[in-house]
Length: 387
Image 1 (cartoon, one colour):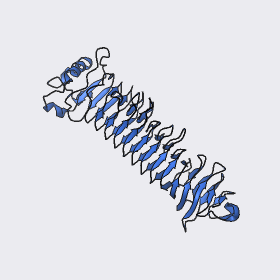
Image 2 (tube, rainbow, N blue to C red):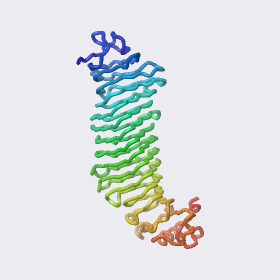
Image 3 (cartoon, helix red, strand yellow):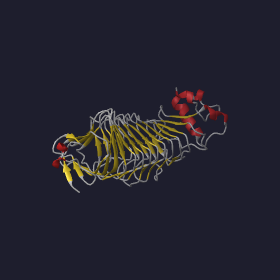
Image 4 (cartoon, rainbow, N blue to C red):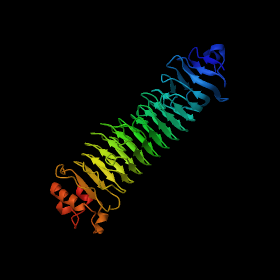
C-alpha cells in the first residue's frame, strides 16, 4: 500500500494533482496535504484505503450539480481538514471513519456517510449544509462532541445509536438541527446540551450513564432558545446533583419528552429554574421535581414526594387525575403569587379529590385571590383561571 500525496489543488482524476501522476487506488492512502481535491468523475466509484491530511487545512469537495461516490475503508482526517460540498451537489462516502467528520462554513450541499463512526476525536461537526450518517457512532476525546451543529443552516442526522464518552456533550445544537434516530448515551458529560437557537430531536432514549455530579441527561443552558424533543425515555444514573432534565435560569428553550423520566436520587429528576421552560413530560416521572419560577407540564404518573422545593413556578397536569398530589410547600417556603396548580375541566365530573388537593387549593385561593374559580369542591382549579 502506498501513500499518494496531493502536490497541488485540483481534480481527483488529474494525475497532476498527485505525486507520481496517478490517482490513488483501492490499496492506497490518499493524503490531501493541505490541498483542495475535487471529486470530478464517477464513472467508477473511487475506492481508496484511507484518506488523511498531513498538511492541515485540506478540503475534499465535488464539482457543482453532481452526485459523487467514494469508498474509503478508513476515513482518518484531522480536525483541521474539511468537507465542502456545493449547495446543489451530493457526496456519498461508503466505509468507516476513525476521526471527526467536519463540514466547514462553505459546505452547503449534502454529505452522506454510509457506515459507522468510531472516533477518539469526536464524531460529526457541521457549520452549514447537511451531514447524514447511516450507521452507528461511538465517539470520545477531550473537548469533543458526538455531533455538533454550529451554524443556523447546519443539519446533522444519525440513523443509528450514538454512544459518547468525550468531555463535551454527546449532542450539541448551537444553531441548526441535530437528529438521532437511535438511542443517545454519554458517561462523561451531559447527553444533550443545546445553546443558542438549536433544535435537537432524539427518537430513542437519552441516558447519562456516569456518576459525576452536576452532569445532566438534558441541560438547557442560560439564554438558550433551543428546542429539545425526545420520543423515548430520559434518565440519569448519577446520584448527586444530576438531573434527567435541567433547565437553567433564564433559559427560554423548551423540552418535550414523550416517554418517562427517571433518576436514582428522588429529588434529582427534573429541575426547572427561574424563568425556565416549559418542560413537558407525557410519560411518568420517577422521583421528584424542582420548579423555581419555571414551567412544568405533566401528563403521566407523578411522584407524591420530593416536591418540597416547588416555588414561584407553574405546574400544570393535563393527564388523568392523580390519586394524590405532591405535598404543598411548607410555611417556611410559602407559595408565591405566580405559582399555579391546574387541572383540566374534564376532571370536575369526578368529585373525589386527590389526596393533598385541599392544601394546594387553600394556598392558591389565598395567593391568587381566585377562590371563585376553584372547583365546586374547592380542590381543583380550572385552566381558564390561568388566562
